[in-house]
Amino acid sequence: MPPLIPLKGPTWPSSSRLSVPQTIFLTQHLPNAEMRSEWRPLFNAAVNGESFAKMSAAIQNKGPSLVIVWEQVMERKIEI
Image 1 (spheres, rainbow, N blue to C red):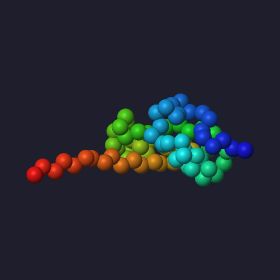
Image 2: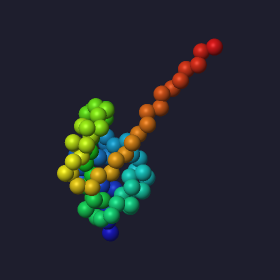
Image 3: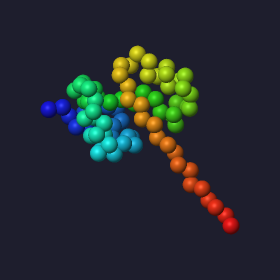
Image 4: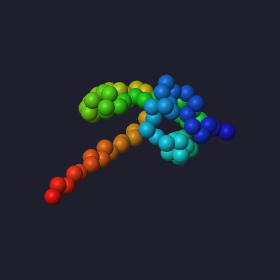
């Protein structure tokens, strides 16, 4: 049976923003066991900058990739 969470990866799960249920959901929808067992971060806008060109270069020739986009919600303060 394929793993429910990635077995390999340099920083998972300690630095992942994905919860365990989110990870299990995504893992179950990947096409083969090889992709399910090893995840590795290729690009992080907070670290690598917000450049589409840099992201494209980072993921090029790395095989199938899963892109996860997080929205940063800014708290709005209303003063009266």
